[in-house]
Length: 317
Length: 317
Image (tube, each protein chain N blue to C red):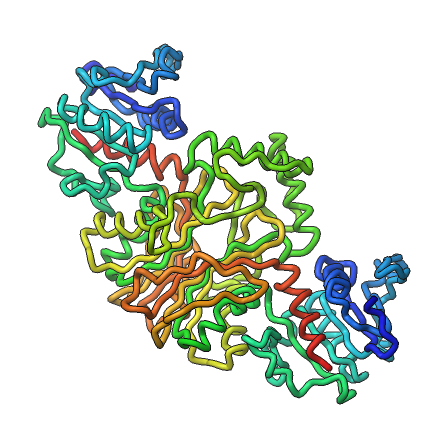
């Protein structure tokens, strides 16, 4: 039983969403030692009952007052909610672990994959015992899954250039997108026109460029997140990264094909926890031992979002 | 009406398969001017009736005698059939356009994408009027779709290095694989265990490394085909190519994410027929104008197999 007399009060913001629900599942799985739990969502979901670890909770409407007495808030309710309520929570002394992109590239906000092999040090100054509010950003799912695999290689042989092509699941666009993929697939199998609400085009038995907005240079937001977040997490403005992000009709596991060019030769490769790394090949298109092709795969909602955030929270003691 | 008094006698070998059926559809679409048509398949399918352009045909069993009087044979019945019957046909004066991998890398056998922008010259010496048998190899589907897009860029600015990640359809593994994807999808939606016969693992809502055999260097056959066939088609042993080939749960269109490093700057980009080229971006990970990221897509059965072969046949006059 993870309910603990002296544990922190934890708020889950956006608890009715796909990641919000996964926050609860991960807190349970990991026996996260909370003292009290607050489930927060929009007015529309307020009043809904949820059971967690055999207790009944009522979802409360998210307001400025929601954060009174809260120690840790896990946010996953979209960027605009984070922008509005994140600073309010911090002012009230809350440590906010934010799953949106709102603060990822803000100077002074740590962007963290908390495994020892990546960058827990970036948040070393933020501790519950300080009794001070702070923001910590959870990286984008594609970045987490990529850097879980590649960071140990980077520390070993320094990545000069990385070319990523993604195979991204419906879950990255939320629970409604997963439901739409399922509904469309049924419709296509029945010979009907697929219903397109979330994505504006057929997703069943199809693939398309990631649905984030496309910038002037032709890259979409998802691709640029991989570029910018990698540089911030590695604290390396020199590393060259390019990406092509594609949605494929799978439910919740993201996969990525990653080509790596290293500064130093790579002598050995060991895989890392939680993200599956496979198909490790010496890159045929490079001389000597300076290149690898790998294929990685990880759960988008779990390590790509909720698990990473809870792992961050676990490092706050 | 494409039946023409003086047209060549055309044999379709493997006519009951996915590509075999597409051969007929493409011959019809393009009003291919054949004199007589022979439909050949294994003993199991012999005797089957098929209608083509309002005529009834009986599928004949493929034997050495099948090629008597044939001018052009379109083969798509697998590598071992090609190896056994291709040379027999050539000895009988037939021009064989082979869709298998059996002869692709054999010295002296042209490996052809017949568009003027790629390499029709490689087969310039083979003509129906010569009345001489010959082998012409159809490249692998992934290679055709890739090089349709990239060859014009290569002629313009010389590709030094190419990194390809594929998103490949069920059709590449034949009609039975497409049926299995459909059946599995129905089963998964009904909460049942998916039936795995062709692929040995779940394909519905899933993806996996291309099912060709994996070599000692970790690359699978499909990936190595892209490397070797590109070099042969471009007649360039220096070009550096690496690939990661992945099956995604779509029916028959292959897509590829391609990262290109050029020797010279690329000033303009124009797209090519039949294969859609999009998402053209100056590669963020390279200096100046020496790199591009592109995404290409083409029908695996049509331009990736049957159409390319028929286009080759059309160049034989």
